[in-house]
Image 1: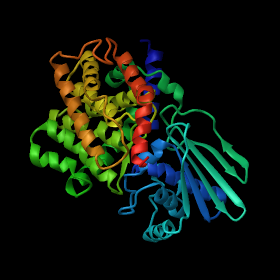
Image 2 (image 1 turned 60 degrees about the vertical axis):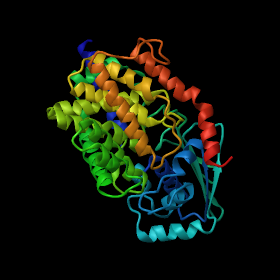
Image 3 (image 1 turned 45 degrees about the vertical axis):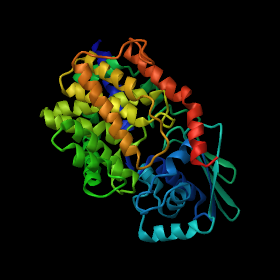
Image 4 (image 1 turned 135 degrees about the horizontal axis):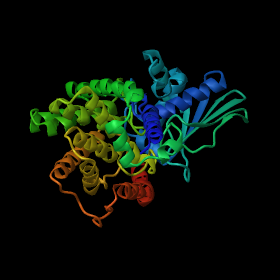
Length: 429
């Protein structure tokens, strides 16, 4: 690869990391609703007298079972939207609920009893779509989010278009052209030899914040305590267990209302935690250099983003799988694995757990993360011994990039009906 091409790839991949490694408070779907509601309130110019929230099925699925951060026990679309309108700061985007106070929460709970917020399912739209209509007197504001959690595509007031963006955000907050260039060979070249300095701040923030929430999940009784259970019954001395437990514990806390922010991956805090914690655990165990640690973390993030690129942020395909492929790749990298062994780690992981379904954001996500990371570690150990599942075994091909494309196809097309049935079950239909 020529020098200019090297530079182009470095810029592309550091841009992707800086676009994706965003800070978020709480599960990103309820936060996206709160962000849209706060934006609608600001557009209206006063507090709404009533609101209507129209959501795609995947938004409803991922909001139904997760606690809105800072509320103690509130779940669902209505409290997310009302809290965003009551006290959210839209300029903070995915940290929109950071300023929430006890008074805001009190007002939200009061409004929840009045039927203030109407919720409707909208069908035949992108998997990630939110439309909020806020009304006060004769004034009305409409805010639409589509494809990505902060991708506002339309703002209206009293029928007049104030802002419109018809571009499609494939799976990111950043420019889609950068994502179209992704392939594993270039990702590996960048992570081994490229200049990661422009993304170092984002990687260090991911390390700091995701470690903090994982420690919180181990120390306190959030959710069903998957991380703490692994450590208690499987043993703290085994790095394979610690890697799983640390990833699961962060999800334990995040799914159950912890107010600590996380750095996300592919629009998901759970995926952000999963690409981070096992890599950091192995970096510490193997005593690698600081530079190697961050290069391994960059690889973990980029592999996960690459797998999710053509799948979209929300589907019936569990994002813990793509994130586990990333952390498995990072672990093999830190262990001195070759490019082939890293590719084989990804192949082995996908051959094992690609069928895990997403049935919404909730405490059991922590258990799915633990299972997916376990598969990634097994895939890593196999690859380091030269063993890989072969071409023609299910969705596996002789090309890692084609295997990843096959995986995206399964998640995007093959699991579409599964996604609908999961939603129907969750809605009691």
